[in-house]
Image (cartoon, rainbow, N blue to C red; front, side):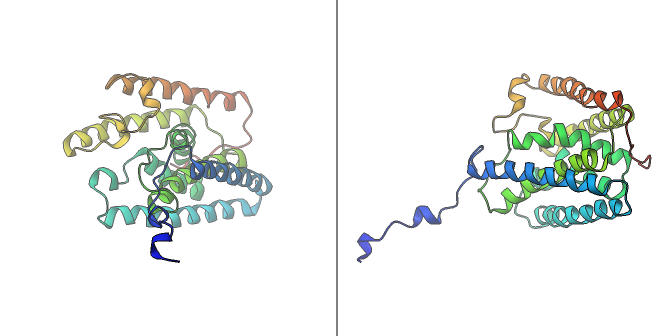
Length: 249
């Protein structure tokens, strides 16, 4: 076979770019659901036993074993600008909170894991802010890996272990979120970053597009977020919760 008849291999060697709702995105969602269901079954099986805390702490170590190297890589490698590399997004903080919640059953950490995970981190699977290469790139794995771990922790602790949010959890989540937003807005303004999309909307289409222009979408986020968090707190308070998160912060 002459060189002229060889197939063009350049398209095969080119790095594929991630496409929202493409095949890799679909696989991620399937894995998210399957692992979440398995964690619920596992948590319920060992709920109230001597192995429950050991299992939760083992999960905390596994999650930390993924999160710490990823955060250090982006922070220290010099491969990304300060606007992306610092662990200041709510999803970064939610990941840290989820590890601590798994390890300690802290009520404050559980509150942040539950509210941030179920309503904010979950948006990464609906409108992913990922414009880099597709699987198996580090960008792809770290983005979906981190967001998946937070959701898994929230689901496992709530529907597996049996921790329950209450109105104190609600207040903690609202106050911490407002405090973070105030600090990050000032930081973004001084440094020229856009953590939390507080100073401008993301470059890709997202749910923020339907909430109005800046700065009104921030107020819309606050009102809708507070209402959504109240809605996911109220059903638990109607029941006699079998367990509560420990009061340690």
